[in-house]
Length: 285
Ligand code: 13P
Image 1 (tube, helix red, strand yellow):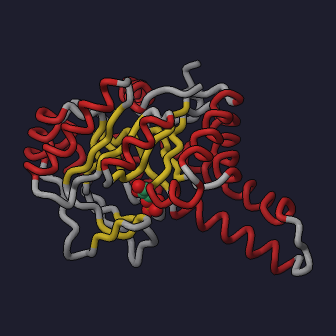
Image 2 (image 1 turned 135 degrees about the vertical axis):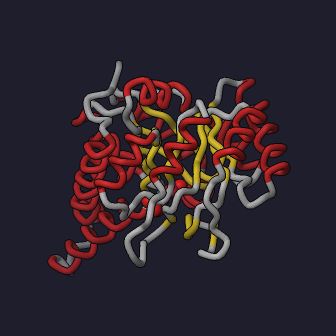
């Protein structure tokens, strides 16, 4: 069942857990996440970046996720991750996404507010939810690159103003995580999450969550994080399983045989995350 980002995160907020938001770009990844969500009765967000849409096509992504949502009886949201381009965001809304992210975080506060407000106005008029970002999350997510020097933590007072002015449904905050593979252990500012949660009423989103120790993610959820984004750890499971299979079976040419263990490995990874986020057993329909 497809639901909006607002609906899925509102339930998480009311019940004090975080929804896993997993990046997708092909059928096997979508099936792997759906299997994990179904097995654990967990609400789940399937998100595609602009790069994933360029790779697979917005119609393929939408059709695959809609088919999955019809088959699997847990609440699911189809979300655009890091939309930076007006036309791309409109394309996703037209295609049937139930949530979009406008990432105008590279701009100054006023411009971020202006651009976000415009997307909120259009998306809300057709019942689509909106996530926005304030502060700058470091690392690389597809074509978006933020160096360590550019990364800046979210200021709680700016977050309060931003949410009030834009009417956005959820807010991605920069609190020490980064997209991609970590060089050392990330230092996540849990007190900052608590402070932002105190002054902002909408659900908070943690990006760059692959590789973050589970005890820190649990603290982040307790502090008010309601959506946790995972991409890199799924990629690593996929690539690890494919490499292991090919190393053991160098003559195998059947894509189904090569991809089946990768799909199973991704399901295991997603299940592990769902349990940490506390979303297992929370499917409400
Ligand atoms: P990771 O690649 O670190 O899991 O981050 C994913 C993400 O935040 C997508 O927006």
